[in-house]
Length: 104
Image (cartoon, rainbow, N blue to C red; front, side, top):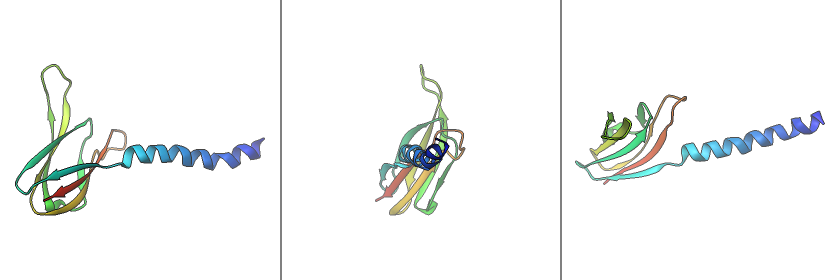
């Protein structure tokens, strides 16, 4: 019985990881024009990092709207044409969001 459990353990780990990876790494798209801004609500995500920060100007701010709890908003302004990937939420114990950002 112990051998069966040990043999199935790697399969269970792969199955569990694939669900986590899919949910965590499926990027959302942001299309923005040079000089224009686009904002996205990222909930409790804190901190961000982009592959090519020269393409955009980005900010992450907490916003309080009447009747709603505070939320964080990631705002991207296009600087020059190109594509980059940004992760908002660098603390592993909090939520994160992955964005594919295209500047036109």
